[in-house]
Figure: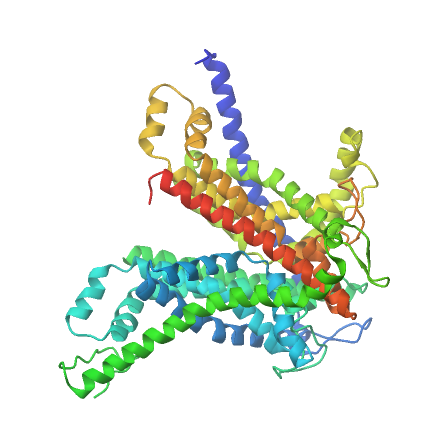
Amino acid sequence: MKKRSIVLRKIVNGVVTGVAGAAAVAGIGMLLWILGVVVQRGITAIDWEFFTRLPAPPGELGGGVSNAIAGTFIITLVATLMGVPIGILAGTYVAEFGRETRLATAIRFCANTLMGAPSIVIGVFVYTLIVIPMGRFSGLAGSVALATIMLPIVARTTEDMLRLVPNSLRESALALGAPEHNMIVQVVFRAARSGMLTGIILAVARVSGETAPLLFTTLNSPYWSLALDKPMANLTVTIFNYAMSPYADWQAKAWGASLLITAAVLIMNLAARALARERRLTS
Amino acid sequence: MTSSASGSEIIVAMPGTRLRQNQKLASQVFRSCAGLCGCSIIVVMAAILFELLLNSSQAMATLGWRFLVTAQWDPVAGKFGALSSIYGTAVSTLIALVIAVPTSLVIALFLVELCPKGLSGFFRTAIELLAAIPSIIYGMWGLFVLAPFMARYVQPVMGKYLGFTPLFQGPPMGIGMLTAGVILALMILPFVSSVMRDVLEMIPPVLKESAYGLGATTWEVTKDVSLKYGRAGMVGAIFLGLGRAIGETMAVTFVIGNDHSLSVSLFASGNTIASTLANEFTEASEPLYLSALVELGLVLFLMASAFQLIAQLWLRAAAVRMGTQ
């Protein structure tokens, strides 16, 4: 080894320490910068009308995004109802029945690949699968796209959580004569409950901020529309359309909607984290 | 007396009784349902490939390989060359990696080796929350805050001192390839640094302790021991970031300028596969136009899947080599 002066080595070490600390602080700085801008610009756009009124015609002041708030809620809810049960059962299959079989390995592999698939590609897929045959954009198509994104996330986290449950629990249930499905639902699920819930919340948080898969599945709508088979207003596509518009009032509305979405997503994330921490403390 | 899934008690039936047979049947049904749902993931994966291939077949037949190697994109004239989109995807991802990889490394180093115990949880949560912010929020911030900031403060300085290279020439407009790369870097940073953190934490303490025992400084231990030992994991982290950055849509669409032209300068507008899809998909009225866009989606899906696959296999191999599995 080359001989180097201890002073120089200590200086290099000090510089790297400083740079590393600065990078971490800068990362947090970026987070605060983004959140700060969203809050500062969003809060001025949010008033009572923002929640209760329909969008104003282009160029006119006022109006709100009540239809988009309802639409985002419905689309996400329907996606959750489709994606979560299938995802949980799929994860259960891989963790409890399949384990290391070839089928389970294939499912795991596909789930990992799907998790890495760009969300806009999922949008293209659902467009070809649902929008073309139906002949029009629809809230349902957006829900299917979001459910497709949720499915592998929920399946993988469920599998990971179920694997943490000790085998002795399963064996004691079976030894008592409990049928397999009772063992899984009432013993294994119960032991993994908070972990699974954390995963579900994170999956819902992830899709509720998605825009790309909705652009050409759900589209957007300036009207109050709750029918799943028609284009449906939603917050994220509204942000995109309003931000790209030349009207200052619409851009302000886009910031208001951004604040709403960001707050919802961050609250869900923090809740999931709190839940996970609680689990670590109690177990 | 039947058992219900919501009830807290499990009813145990004697062997051979009717109840026992019902329970067996219920278990069978549960198992089959779970199996079907599991298989649905494979079906979805296959369906995505099938639908993309089917709906892009017209473009493939008409345009052939020219689709991938020409840059002229003129829907009116029926000319579709994806080169500018592919080039833009590659360049913006590359910029993101150049910025994000070293930054992630030092952040991971800070979190694992340097940060005081009490603060590390706070730093971790904050960095991870960066990953939770939706893409469209990055887009809003990028378009209205970062792009003007880049145009006013960063790009003029870069143009002044680095303007002799063709990469940093042209008017500082704010929007363009460079700004898109910066946003992407910020978006993949949490993912890359979290994998790097895991890798650094997997290094056996005894290795590091022996290096410290020989008198090495923290940086020397990291550079010569941790990084060498965890090299494979670091490469896996980079591929993971690559797979993330390549398909990022909304943030890029907001700031890249959306222009189908090839230019060397990073200040110039461009587009990526994802931004082209986001902008043009609803406008595609001609069947060939739509087919070409679906083919773009297919190219993106294959690229992202390939990087995802490499990252997974690589990280698994790395974990095996490091003896954690």
